[in-house]
Amino acid sequence: MYKKILISTDGSDFSNTAIKEGVDLAKSLDSSIIFVTVTEIWSALDMAHRANVGVTNPINEYESSEAEAAKLILDLAGEVAGSNGINYETVHINDMHPAEGIINTADSKKCDLIVMASHGRRGLQKILLGSIASEVLTHSNKPVLIIKQ
Figure 1: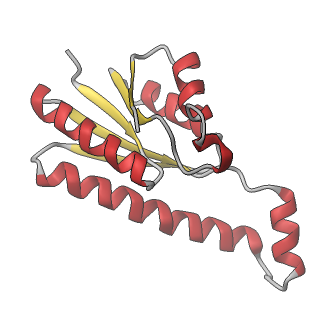
Figure 2: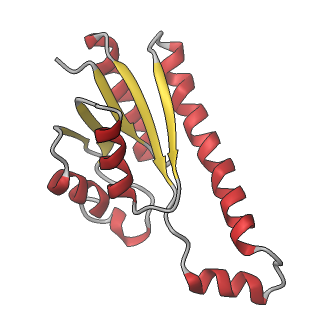
Figure 3: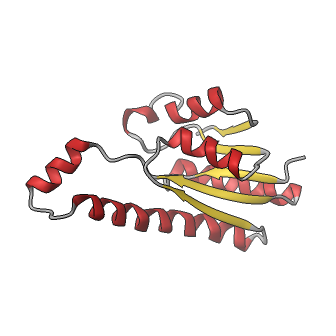
């Protein structure tokens, strides 16, 4: 049925629950997994603020910090899949709105299903059905499994 499952993660406790559920599903279906995390575009105001406090290359600092955070997030997800004997791949998407990055990755990697948490760690959005989850549900042409928190 689902041979390649994309699991979106932002490193939050909510997305870690989605990872566990997605890995369990992949194991029961003998599917492979693509884990994706998306680094959002950094605002010009944030860049200007960092430059004003003396950071000589705020863009490089941001990109390095986000790449390091993404590696930790994806390594943790990979450990869960690996410990369950599941083949997996990790993808870090830079400078993109999360919903767009998730959908684009699912399409480019030819995934059959997207698994994600109902909420992430993105500000006020975690109060409602996360706007990212809502956008993925609305715009993806793939089935989406939302893990409710």
